[in-house]
Amino acid sequence: MFERPSQRAQEVIFFISDTGVSKEMMFTEFEAVLDGVVGLQEFANTTSYCVFSVINPGLQPQAFVFFTIDFDENGEPPSTWNLPFQTLIQKANPVTFGSYQAKVITQSSCSTEWHKTGLWDPSEQVVAVICEAIQANKLCLSTESMDGHARQQSIPSFATQPAAQFAASVPVHSRPSHIQSSQGHSLPELMKEVAAQLSGVQDVDRDASRRLEKELGETIKTLTVDLHAMTQRATELEQKNLALMEESFKQKSSFSQMRADLEQSLDEKIKLSVAEARQALKTKYEKKLKTYEQEYKNRYTEKVSAMKNTTSASTQAVQDMQNMLQDKDRMLDEKNHRIDHLEERHAEDALKLREQAESIDKLEAKMKQMSEELAMFRKEKLRLMADGADKFFEKLENSGLNFIAYHPGAGHISVSVKQVAEYIENPQIFAAEKVGLSLEAYQYWLGHYEKPCCQAPIIGGKTCGQKIQRHDNPRDFSPGISDRCEKHKTGISATQRVFSS
Image (cartoon, rainbow, N blue to C red; front, side, top):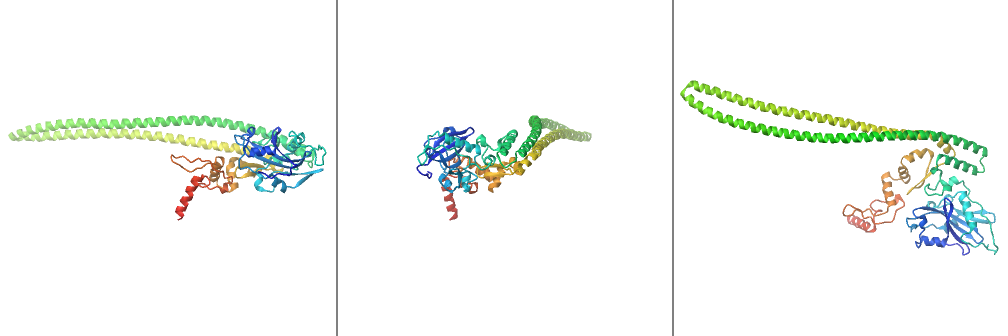
């Protein structure tokens, strides 16, 4: 799988952890792991920091390659993982160590950009641990030098940069504790690490280092007190807000239920009352009308008979007829008056409903205002935290420090002190701008990167779900094509040919 050095050289893989060298194996064993013959269950679901070492007989180091490798839940590396150790070693410049030379390949010293993401920078302490492991010789390597004499020689440190500069490019969640980035430490630990780094630089004056350490300690104490007070205040505001939101939600639910019940009850009552009243009035007046008509007919017949006998009788009949018509008109007026009264009651009920709706709208406006105030409190909290840390960040910036963040597709992103607040607010926007994509496009690619499977729609509103090859570069990713399996890619190509013809 990889190029091999001379037959006399011995190749060893060292696994680095918080406690030092956690595992050693010959490169031939490591090749079996890469080929999927065996797995390393103790490294399941982790990113391991390893060292490929070429050691000559007599325990003389010839080359070191500091690389990282991911293991899945079965302790197996990716099948596509491949790092050309020998090619990197051939391109590296040797470093002289007394009577022998060694080549060192780290992330900062590698000249090939696409290999840098698979490398890391060690601290001086890591180098010392590896040298001790070589001299301990747990793998029983050959200790006889090429001239036939046994040789025991310690390997001096060849790390030429401070540990903090190497550690800045390594993710905090998996880097060994002695090379861990300062981003993952608390403020007291950060003070100790900065002081340790300053003491390790030979050209820095010790008195200046002590003064800076004392000044950092006082600043950190002040910031710690301010941060504790702001955190306590923010916690109180969050608790009050939660209580108000819960009370508001209960009131809104109660009002909504009351409003619905009242509207339903009023509608039912109004419909029932109007229908019953109309039916009752209709039945009542129909009966009365029939009675009056019958009486009118009887009276009219009697009056007509009487009119034939006498003129006075005829006049009386006409008068009676007029009275009867007046009674009928009066009854119709009463009916219309009752109907008007029912309509007035309906209008009053509708007005009450509108007033209740306005009350609910006012309550919703108050809830919206409370939400805006909460957002303002949160922004104020962030501003206070940022203002309190300005002095500390200014000292870090004056010291020439930058923060490094890793995002899939964007790689290691350098974040200046001035950009920290912007990055913390939304890291994915920061990464999307780095690769030249919109946030939606980057998030869509990130979903493919985390779970590379076919997104072609199938029957039932589901997706294909077939596992596909992951596209590591978001700029080369095309939605609808790159996230399709071979079967659905063939369907897309056929469709394109039909339309193109």
